Length: 296
Image 1 (cartoon, rainbow, N blue to C red):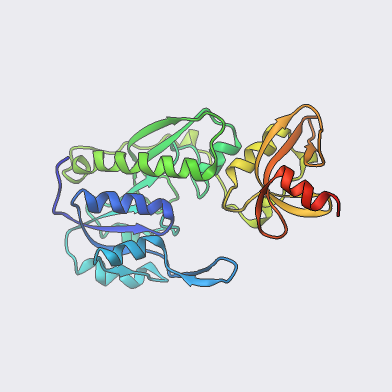
Image 2: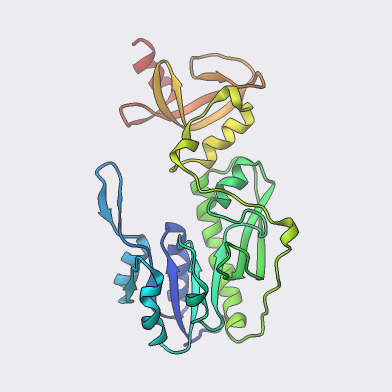
């Protein structure tokens, strides 16, 4: 792949962003700044934690900007002259006033086959809906959410057993490779984007803690098992068993109930819990949980 000396500002916050930033740096692109969200409190101890892209950028001696309002870096961007933008899971809507500062705009990596799953949870939505495939779209960013014209797409088949962390990792690598393949042609103007078909647009929502609660009476066993795989990490999948609230991390379908961890769903099929996080905070298999909690 031909390397370029054109200046690029990278926008990203989530761990999904890090693979792309590393790929650009290792490919020799001239990353002149990384824009990421402010440090946030994370974990049980709520420690102030920097985004992983910030840590990596600092190690690479790349300037890091963490504006609370993007308009606050307008002059910083202008001072760099002719500059392109690349955005991967930044987490904020970019206004036109910022997008228009870039040439040829801001190039976005989105983990869905747009116009399907515009919005913040496309990977989780593909798993929850039992899709047979997903993919990555390289697009030109617009202020309207995920509505910009498309440079290219690459598909990825789904087996129906993927977990959210596994699919995130797979699509981050796939998206990075596609970005690196397309970027030279985008920057020299030989690859032009094509408008999306608005009639086929679908949307996904921001997941919240309320999505964590699993209500078997409202779901088929298949729907419940998909949520277990889709919501790993956040918002997780919580359910009451033996009077205890647990986080389900692995489960399978069953036509019969053998233990108290086999929960009947609305279709009469059971979701059988294989692995969980107990109230103690420890992850354990079903047998260990039953040995420790069933007697109590």
